[in-house]
Image 1 (cartoon, rainbow, N blue to C red):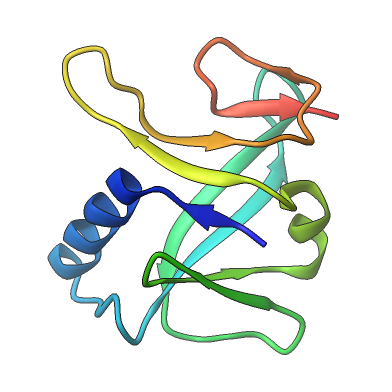
Image 2 (image 1 turned 90 degrees about the vertical axis):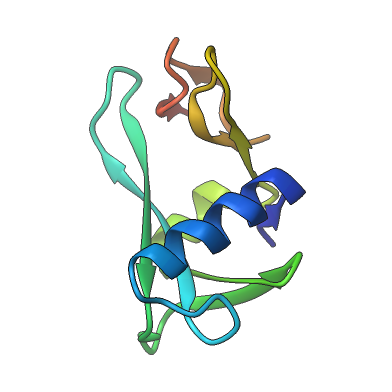
Length: 109
């Protein structure tokens, strides 16, 4: 399962509306790809299609889809949002990550 904090929910809802998506019908696609200074980096997009092998979750009224491969790296992750002057934007609090980079956008296991 992937969780969504209240601050992330508000920001996701706003961004989805700005891009023509409906938070009650469409999805946040979360994934992992090779790259970044720690070896793996996070991906976050909006989508209205589910692939056959996607895992589907809902937390805090946000619908999330994760491809099967990425799910193994993201189990138990909480998506948060940090705004303000020193904010980083979306932050993945991933209990599986053994090392993260300074910017928080990549990790390794």
